[in-house]
Length: 71
Image (cartoon, helix red, strand yellow):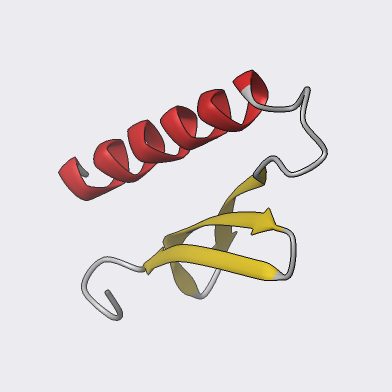
């Protein structure tokens, strides 16, 4: 859970940085996508992705966690 909080904090910080710089056409843009997966026959899983774009450059950070099975 500590990693999830760190990742969310990082994502919000990057999104705030992108929002401050959106006056320029050469600014970073960000998209944060959190997801929760659940089903009858599987453990609850979370998936968080942060994508950043700057001109021709792309940055992607992600974390998928399914406790006890995949981390």
